[in-house]
Structures are given as C-alpha cells and as structure tokens.
Image 1 (cartoon, rainbow, N blue to C red):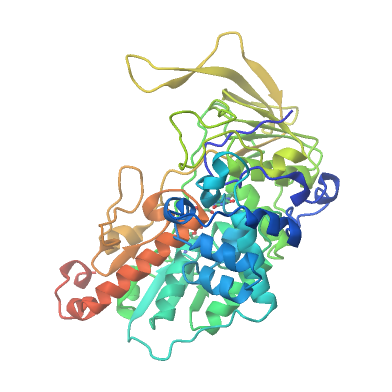
Image 2: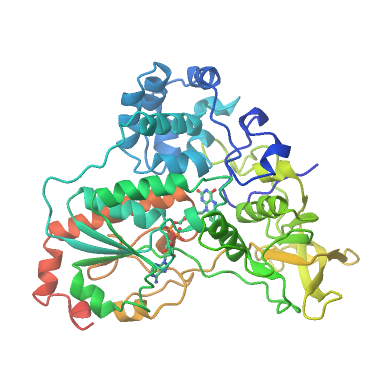
Length: 495
Ligand SMILES: Cc1cc2nc3c(=O)[nH]c(=O)nc-3n(C[C@H](O)[C@H](O)[C@H](O)COP(=O)(O)OP(=O)(O)OC[C@H]3O[C@@H](n4cnc5c(N)ncnc54)[C@H](O)[C@@H]3O)c2cc1C
C-alpha cells in the first residue's frame, strides 16, 4: 500500500475516488485528474454546511477571508450569480485555488470535526466555472486612473494578485516576468494534471483587457536595472518567489540524470504548453527507474509526471517520519490537520518510504551517468537537549537502482539578484526579502508572496499580493511618490 507524508500542505485532503478519473485512463494523458462534481453530490455536501455563527472556515482557515457560509448557501439555493459575487468580493482568482488549494478552510470546517467537511473547494470551482461559462466574468476597467505607475516584478500568483488589485484601483501596472509566459509555479511547476494552463491564459487575457501590461521574457536585474525601473515607475513590487533550490550535496551529485524537481516539472509543462518541441535530453523517465528525493507535494508531482512519461518504476523517499493518520493532541481542530495524506499521484503507483536518507549517488554501466542511490534508514535523535536530527541506523543501508533522480527538497530563499543591492533591499537570515510591517523593503519598493514570506501556498501568495497592493495604494495616498521625487527618499534618489 502506498502511504503519504505531508511535510508541506499543498495537496488537497484525500477525496473520495469517484471525484477522480480512473487511474488507467488518466495515466494516458496530462489532462486534469479531478472530475467536475456531480450536482447532487455537491448539493448533499453543501446541505451539511451549518452556516456557523463563528465560521472558522472563513476566519481561521481561508487566508483570503472568503465568506464561505454565505457563498455555500447561495450555491445550495441555486443563486449562482450571487454566490459568484460573494466569492469575488475577496478572491481575485478563484479558478486557481479551486484546483490547487489544499483547502485550509475545509481543515477548520466545524462539520469536519467528526465527518467529511463541507466540499468548499469544489463548490468554489462550480461557482467560478459557471461564472465563466455564463459570461458573468468581464474585464473591469477603472473609470479614472490614479497617476500611479507601478512595476511588479514576477508574474506568479502573488505578483498577479498585486497587479490585479492595483490596476483595478486605477494604477498603471507593468508586470515583468523572466519566463516566456506569466504564472510562476502555477504554469511552470504545478503539472497540467492538477491545473490545466488554459485556466491561466483565460485570466491573463482578462487582466490584459483591464490594462495590465505584461512584459514577459524580461529578467529584471539583468535586462532592466534598478535605475531604469525607478525612472519609469513610482513604485516597484518584488514578487520574485522563493526559488533558490535546496541541493543534496553528497558524493556523485555531478552524475548525469540528477535533476532539480522544478527543472524537471517545468520542462514537461513547457512541452505541453508548446514552448519546446521535445524534452531536453535526460528529462524523460520513459523506460527508466526513477527516484524522487523528497516526500512532499512537489515530489508527488514528479511521481505523477514520471508515471505519465512511462517510467519503469518510481520510488519516493522522504527523510521525515510518516505523519499520523489522525490529529494528535498537539494539533487540535481548527488548526490545519498535519496528518498522513494521499495525493492523486500516489494512487497511481510508485513506492513510498519515510525516514530515508540518501548517502551517495552511484554511477551505472554508462560512465558519468547515474545508476543507483546508496541510502539508509534514519532515526531522529536529539543530542544534548537540541532539536532532533536524522541519524543513519547501522545495518539499514541499501542500494536503490535508478537511472534518474529528481531532487524535491524545497527552497532556501530568493535567487541571487544584483537588483536587491541596487534598490537597498536587505535579506533575512532565511534568504528572503526583509520586509517592514507596511510590506515595504525600501522606499517605494515593496515585496509580496513567497519572496517575503517563504515557500508556501498559492492562496497565501494571492492574499499577500492583495495586502501588498493595499500598502502601495496607502503609500501613494500618503504622497509617497511625490515625496520621493522631492528628494525625501535618499536611498532611492541615489540609485
Ligand atoms: C512543483 C510545485 C507544486 C506546487 N503545488 C502547489 C499546490 O498544489 N497548491 C498550492 O497552493 N501551492 C503549490 N505550490 C506552491 C506555490 O506554487 C507557491 O507558493 C506560489 O506559486 C508562490 O507564488 P509567488 O508569486 O510568490 O512566486 P512564484 O510562483 O515563484 O512566482 C515568482 C515569479 O517571479 C519570476 N521572477 C523571479 N525573478 C525574476 C526577475 N528577476 N525578473 C522577472 N521575473 C522574475 C519567476 O519567473 C516567477 O514567474 C507548488 C510549488 C511547486 C514548486
């Protein structure tokens, strides 16, 4: 039996299998795994919403503060347009979260204390898709402009949310993105079988119609420097993500066939998106034995991708222990349940192991190419009252044959960029942009999303992007840009 570890929170809670397409069918393609919920099934679920006096789903669970009980009740009564208005009052892009959110709201649903929570995420999907299909989602062009020009650097969910809110408020926004298309990890990380990219394109078209200018293929810091940004714009928002990959520094790391997970996933997504005609050499798992190092959700995305590419076998190794099947006393409701979960990819195949460390990559028959991993089981021991650390257990070493390995071990902060020094932006010890309580990182410069908060979730990136937009507007209202031009902000004036 495959079991699941969730050191992160990205995977939606395990759902009944009838919500997914049959395994044999879905392994043949990269189309979305999840089916649209049947109307009667959704209604049955929505009837369980208690319209709680204190809705924890809204107040504790949802980072966007979605008015979930109201939305649910409108949906149950078939008042779809009102349900949509309720949803859109707090969420800029429900079509993204409806597909990839782990549904923190469901983790704090009162109903979920004893049985299945209300199906909030699927209700959200039904509402937003009905909205698009019925033509209710239209571009909203502000009647007047504020005379505020903002550059947003990075078009992931946080940058998109910042740009969306600022543009609707009347700012002129240019979104700079180093990749060929906007979306960040929504486009180049999350596989199509979880999020079909037409959903992104549909939203980007709307945003462009609303006046957001997309400048893709521009690496800010390299192609455009701080001086030009400051000359062209009143404010700058850095929404560059936390994308410096954590490496596995063990002997044999230089062997061919070892990839960072996001490079591997991005290649497959670019192929499906028509950006490249074939996968780069060594990026297909077809006929190969693959190992994914890292038991989180990026790892499970690699597993699902490798199975679809036709891998001979896939193993996923996690260094942490398997989480418990139910909440522990240290993790009470309404907190997000840190429990064992299975993703859709885990249902599809592969072997999963916990408490495993990789000691060495070994070459195979072809010189310079990966042939196996030398691994061992670990136990977590706390020395001298310190934090528990993994220690290999004697006699547990084993050799795992593999021609391909994907490293899905997380991120260690923002990527290096001369821009930060030029703009006077400091980094935290965790390698993130050091942000003030007003979301600023320097005078007239703000930060949003994973770049400031660390690797997290799409819904949190979106919520933070909205907060950052609010901060930029408050700064503008307080005369921020004017003050700077008058020389009140020496740091920027000197750039
Ligand atoms: C494989 C994978 C799967 C995930 N699955 C889920 C999931 O199922 N559910 C979920 O909620 N979360 C998931 N996440 C996490 C989620 O995607 C991130 O938390 C979220 O995308 C962060 O948003 P962001 O806008 O802050 O950064 P990002 O999405 O990282 O976007 C940053 C953008 O900035 C651009 N950029 C960086 N530097 C520059 C520069 N100098 N000039 C121009 N552009 C620049 C990048 O190209 C990128 O487009 C996943 C993450 C990964 C890696």
